[in-house]
Length: 511
Image 1 (cartoon, one colour):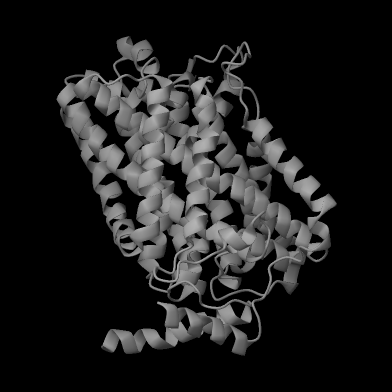
Image 2 (cartoon, one colour):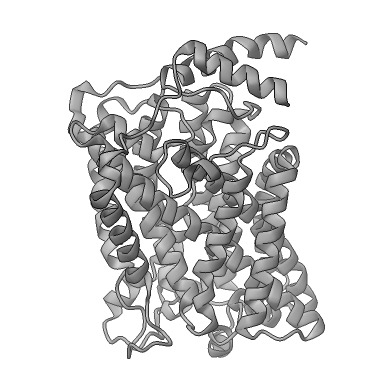
C-alpha cells in the first residue's frame, strides 16, 4: 500500500508530461526503471549479436578485430547513446526518435520527422529479423547436433517463421509475462556469459595463446586490403550495439520516464560493453588454430568452437544458454518495434495507419503493430533462400537504419544550441563534444556497412544493404513529395486535456 502511495505522484507527473506532449495515457504504465533498462539490455543481447556474427568476424579480421573492435565500437556507441539519452529526457514518448526530430528541427520539422521515422521503422524491422534469424541458426545447429536435422536454408527460414510466431503471440496475449521475462533476461544474460566463459576457461585441455587472441588477423573475404577487411569486421560489434532506443519507445509505459528512459539507454550500453568483451575474449581463447577452416564453414561457428574445445555434450548445453538469451532478445525486440509502429501510425505516417495504430482494449497492446513487426522481419530474411550473405546484409540494414534514426535528432539538437530545453537528465557542457563525435561516427559507419563484404562480387554474395536503404529512401521520398508533404504535419496531438482524459476514461471502461 505504501509503495502505491509513493508511486502515485510519479505516475501523475508522467501522465502530466505526456499530456503536455499531446498524448493520452493509452498504454499501461507498469514498468520500473530496471525493467526499462532490461528491455534495451535484452535487445542489445551480447549472447545474440556477439555469437550470431562471430563467424562473420572470423573471416573479416579474425581474432584481432573480434577482440579489439568491441571496445572501440562500444566507446563510440556510448557517445551516440549519451546524446540520445539527453533528448529522451526532454521528450519521453513512445514515438521516440521521429518525435524528437519534429520538435528539434528549426524548419521543415515534418520532413525531418518523416525521414527519421522511416529509417527507424526500417532499422526496427531489420533488427527484429536479425535477432530471430540468429536464433533460428542456433536452434537449427542444436537440432542438427542432437537429431541430425538438415541445415538447408529453407529449414532455417521455417524455424525463423516459428520463432517470430511465438514472439508475436507472447506480445499479443502475454504482456505481463513479457514484462517478467524481460527482468529475468538480464540475469540470464549475465549468468549465461559467466557460464560460457567459465566453461571455456577451465574445461578445454588447450587454449589459444594471448598473442594469437589479441593480434592474429584473418582475411577470408577475397579482398586484398587488410585495413578494409578489418573495418568490415566492426559490424560484429556495431550490430550488437543496437536496439537501445527501446528504452525511449517504452517511456509511455515506464514510471519516472524522464529519468528512467535515459538511464536505461546509457546503462544498457555500459553493461553490455563490459560483459560482451569478457564473452568475446573467452570464446576466442577456446579457438583451436588447426580447426579454423572447420569453424568458418559451420552453420554456427561458436557451436563448432565449443564442440572441438569441450565436446558435443558441452556444446549442446552452451547452445541452450545462447538460444534462451536470443529468444528473450527477439521477444523484447518485437515489443519495442511494435511500440514504434504504434506511435508512428498514431501520427498517420504509415499506409493503413488507422489499422496499425489499433489498440486491443483488453490487453492495452498494439496488436496489429505486433504482427507487422513480425511479418516485416520474415520478409527481410527471405533472400537467404538464395543469398549466402543475407544474414550479414540484414544486420547491416538494421545497423544503418537504426543509427541514421539515432543521430538525426542529435544533429538537430546541436543546431538548436542554447535554445534546447533540457530535461532532468542531461550532459551539461559535454552536450556539444559528445553530440559531434556521435554524428561523425554514424556518418562513417553508414558508408562503411553498405560496401561490398566479399570478392568477387556476385548474386550469391551481393550485399543488398544498399538496395534496402535506397528503397526506403526512395519510397519515403516519393511518398513525401507526392502526398505526405500535404498532410503529414509531424506528431499529432490527440486533443485538449479534457479530450485526453476522455480517451483514457474510455479505455479504462473497456478494460
